[in-house]
Amino acid sequence: MIQTKPGKQAEADMPAKEPIKPGRKTRRRLARELALQGLYQWCVAGGTAEAIEAQLHETREFPKTDEKYFSGLLRGVLANVPTLEEQIQPYLDRPLKELSPVEISILLLGTHELKSHPEIPYRAVINEAVELAKSYGGTHGHRYVNGVLDKLAAKLRAVEINARV
Image (cartoon, rainbow, N blue to C red; front, side, top):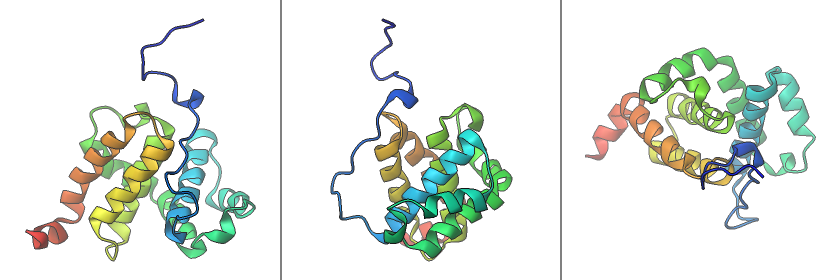
């Protein structure tokens, strides 16, 4: 048996954590979760936004989501990956490609929301990304996601943040 350091088990071997309050997810939360699944699939296997979206349409969760928001997230991220990656990279301590596919997907999703959805408060965007990281990411991935998006929000949402002071 191969021994690993505690907390260092490969992410692929870890089961997804169960949500704290099943059945209480909003349609937007479900849309983000499905978009995350699609982005994860894209990171691991590639594919087009259309093909990934069509596949996710077939899931039992899809009718419960905000379908328009889901589609906008998935297509918006995939249409702008190079720009989003360029915006994220300065706030990372290593190349983006060295992060897990889950963390990459969450950071792309959060960055897209910060950039393209000013109607959603930046704290809500960060909180949603952190919750996704807690549910689907590695042990301390949520802390990393929080730190990166917090720094990025200071740049992308400076007016909103300064208005709070």
